[in-house]
Image 1 (cartoon, rainbow, N blue to C red):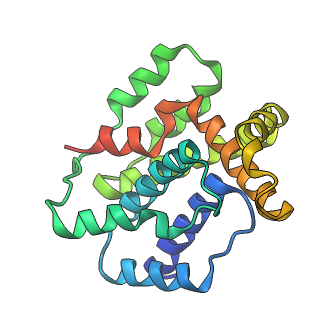
Image 2: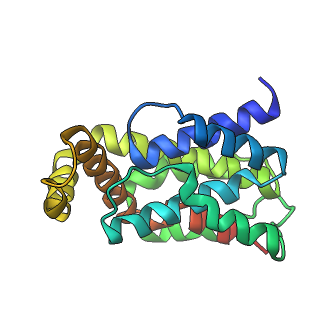
Image 3: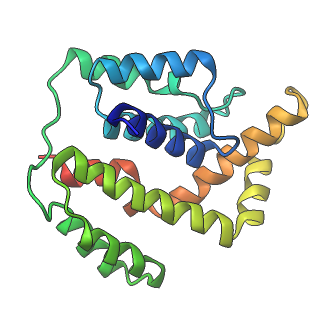
Amino acid sequence: MSTQQDAAAQIVAHLVSLRGGAPFLSSSDARLLMGWLNQGVPVPLLLHALEEAAESRRKKHLRTPLSLRSAKKAVVKWKGGEKPKLQPIRGALGPLIKALRESGRREYSAVIVSFESLDGEGEALVGQALEVSRDFFERAWEHGERQMWMAQARTELASLESQVAAPRFAQLVEEVARDLLRQEHPLLSATRIWDTVGA
């Protein structure tokens, strides 16, 4: 698999982790993604932007599912501004590992071990850490309080239920439910990982 294919696969996996649903992109999202990767937009920036967009969308109760277009604002800002600098050193996750330990949450033990074993630097380290984080959230979704999160999401979106088709409403419920899960673990968000490794 080429570097670009690997990057695209990582972004699609993160998008699915955020919204649920099938692991594929619409044709417009696929074109957008290939364009960004060809322009050298960092994968961690896109993952970070998608996560921020998911949180923002939940607060606004938007009717359309999360897509890569939701990251467009961050990409435009990246193109026009100072590029973020990531620490080119191993062990840059140290402060985050310390915070995970101090939280006292047993469910973080495997994440801590995984973070300590990462050997990437800068952008590669962020990508590795985000993969560990994504795995944590997928396991939590599969084995956690999914019905509780789904019920809370349905309550939050109740005003939209009569305004959108049933399949679309089901998508929105899962997206909000997954965001509720992420809100319970802010230390493992893309934003926290990005900021920790950022200079």
